[in-house]
Length: 555
Image (cartoon, rainbow, N blue to C red; front, side, top):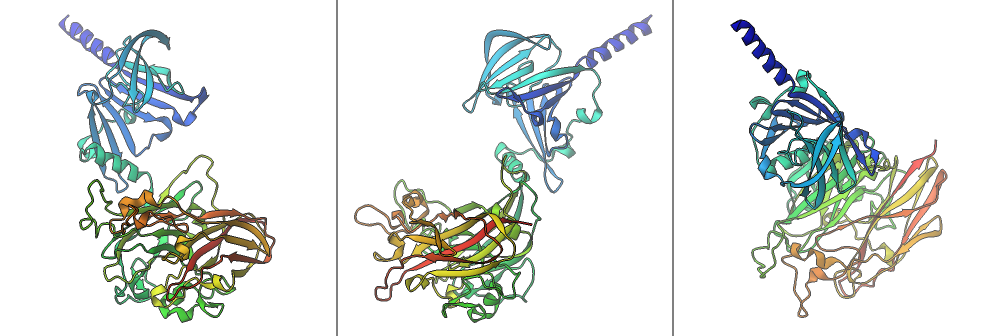
């Protein structure tokens, strides 16, 4: 009799516990339209709940709710196979406001609550009619009962469509152990780890010095993953291997810079060296500017020829006046100087040239012993935005007058004073969806120089003007807190505030994309015309312009 009673109690306990096991499936809609990839599942094992998106069963990040401890757990698997975990008490989340409304969902009576999360209003429908607890979003009212529906801002609804009681696969019930949790970290550390795990970073340079006189002996030519210094130390170069491009990936170049002694604003460029011709800019760096083809009897390596392609510019940037090095020496109440300048630019359209083994360089023109320190990363973000176009399969560098070897004798871009910049290239196959990616900045830093005077840029294709504009920046004051050593004038303005020919100290100069007609196979001539300002004594103006063709080739 006692045995039968104990067995009955045991069976009752087992049955009762089984009733606390369930799989809840949620569908997601946005403006009434289904979002299939948003489908969610809750795996409930008594007080332990595992939440995951159906499409992400092998996701790097797993989420759990512990109703005994009244806290959530987020466990991240790192790229190196390690783990980190963030724990957060239910009480630390935004608390819901209970409302009098009721509804029935999947046959269960529900009550309504509302919670405000980062200015978003989330309506919550929950039931206490089941011995189950859980939420389809760990940050939405985890302390209530079983949440069967949420509606965010009246637009996105997450609604339970199935409740399956009883057995659950052991894999879905797996609870994190100390070995699979790794260290428990604070929210800031965890969030940074989550973000970094979502994309691939290719580190090109880290804390490299670019300064005149820092031309230390180079290692043997042609080595990968070592830094070479050229042009008196003002160019750094490295051969690296980049990932093969996959559809939808976005590529961002990110360069951080601070002064290591130089107090002035300087021209900077991140570039690739095309090697698919008989000559390349690498020859000039290794052997001197005389190894480069000459344009107009004077200008070395600036235009494409049948045997040469100029450097492909990824990013044009301008160092601010003395950021970091002069912060402490330039104290102004209320001015909190930046620690460094960070330049980020989407360069996805250049992906066809950014695959496999490439030479990547950074130039900053300066004659200062300390110069600048830079770090460069290329970041690959999978998936991209919805509707992101594929990068152009044809990327053809046409011209680049930025004298990257300035400190080794390469001429400034002054050819516009006597004539336009003209380049004729052979297009082996017809191109469509054609654009010219054009970067232009004017220089000559005195009152009469082209840095401070508006100049018309005209672009011609096969003798016909296809685009014209005046490149001019009026937003330079935006970057004041990057410029501690900028000179201050009697009228209250700073030198870094002044409008300039398409650049500001501490900013990027983004490309202009010029649509062009379809190009048949054969020779085509491109021309850039700019009315260069006249010399005044030893002062002169110059223009740094770079251009490359983007397009698709016809079979």
